[in-house]
Image (cartoon, rainbow, N blue to C red; front, side, top):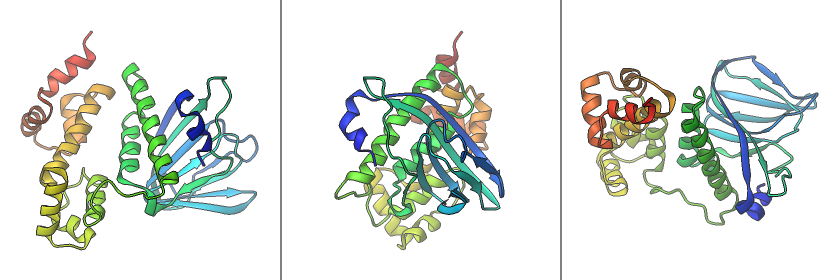
Length: 273
């Protein structure tokens, strides 16, 4: 996979990027078995399960925290097979300097769960923020994220010594934190995910990131809030509640501490008439 990307990286033109995100109930199907897929796509399953069939036979199951590449023109039938599945799909086309299609793979490729780094999960979650906005800023943001996603997937497939960017000792706990940062999980759960004590997790986290785990979690929430305000047009209160803050006053104070400006200043800067 991605041989053409390695050869043509300097000349790639990515366009027609669209994002579909949401929750699907069991039994919902999408059928491409007659005309084939109209564009390339990456499917990320945050929670639940998707089953893909080719020629009426089961071919691949994509479940929690797994990423799959869905090739352009591929014929298949996709079915949501869990009671509820939360997902993000990024559709795109890609051409070289001669305006020829660049093909990542002719077959559906699953990036195995053990190989999906926290970077890929964060990128796909950021795509979800762009799914309902049509502004120029969002369009440019999608292109930026698309290149970052390809770079992350490429690194997973071609690195001879791929390592997580964070310490293996706390990697599972950090991944849990970044996946559930909108939830108020206690630090004991992050430590348990890494199979270490709370003190060991807290100290290792502080050494790795330069900040305590819960303060890091709040910074992730502020980052999300800023994107909702600047890219999706949310009001200050809407962004606060959608980012896990229940106290607007605390949110505004902490937002200014992290970003150097108030939420209102961010909104005026990006949405001034």
